[in-house]
Amino acid sequence: MSFRISTHALDPGRLKDQLSADAAGACACFEGWVRNHNDSKSVRALEYEAHEGLAVKEGEKILAEAIEKFDLHAAAAEHRAGTLEIGDCAVWVGVSSSHRDAAFSACRYIIDELKSRLPIWKKEYYADGHSGWINCVTGQPTAPE
Image 1 (cartoon, rainbow, N blue to C red):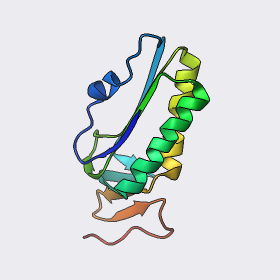
Image 2: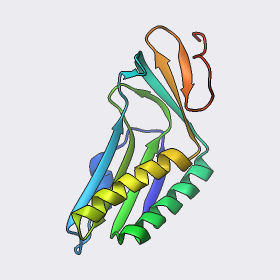
Image 3: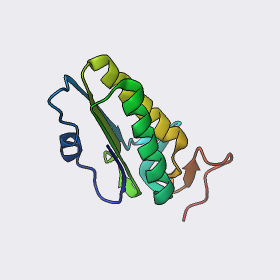
């Protein structure tokens, strides 16, 4: 079980290697990628900021909850911090279990909990030169930097 914040590109193959277990009959993984749009705005890049200490502590707690709740053999997740380009992997979640239903359900549980509980903030940079923090405050994007 491991949760990490990384300032480097995520390597899904390396991350998936952590999940192997002889008793496992299923593996489910989720990759969240940076897309080129949001709310009808053209996005050119993202920036993630994280309170690493709190994020890792809460991320480990979420993985432990999932292992117990879904009877998993292994669980791992990693989230990027820093500036990401379109197509970059921003978050990766993977689990192994004896059965596929538990693996799918656990993977969904983990990503949903990470997104709602971790102190990680996302800023979008738009093609029109504006930028804005997403789901942090209400209001309009900030002026170009």
